[in-house]
Amino acid sequence: MTEEVSTSTIQPSAHGYLMLLVGDERATSDAALGIALRGAGHNLRVHIIEFQKTGRDRGEVKQTASEIGSPGTSPERTESAVKDARLHVNRRVTNILVLEGILTLVDQGLVNESSILELVNNAAPWLDIVATGTSATDALKDAADSITTMETTKAESNGSELRPGIHY
Image (cartoon, rainbow, N blue to C red; front, top):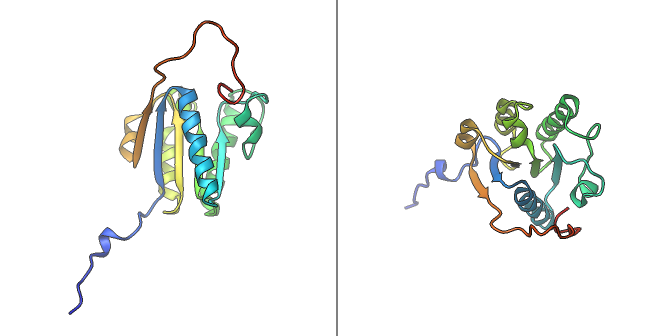
């Protein structure tokens, strides 16, 4: 006699996995880049899109897969970054897509939350989307598979020099 196994518990999701990293921007960046590094260590295809950081002296900007558009946050640069994210979702070859700073732009009204929801809904089940920023809308929280709130509890404030690799 064989035991019947419910396929509903083992079937993959019909869409991508959404992880929100919310809170202190440096902490969310550190966590997202750690996830990207961990994924690369597993030979996964990782793509990082920096939505806000553009300073060429920032270590993560020097190493990201693409620097999109002109420096700073502008509607053109933001649209180009969203278009790049759509391209990676539609090509179906990326395993981890990091949308660095996109939640902050949603909060500022520069990106519509529906753009992120569309990415997740159109993503292959094997695509993990990591979105970072200072806050997340209720709709994004509802759609998320995982939410982590990041908080800096101590930071040196005596005007000491910023350390490369630690602070930028």
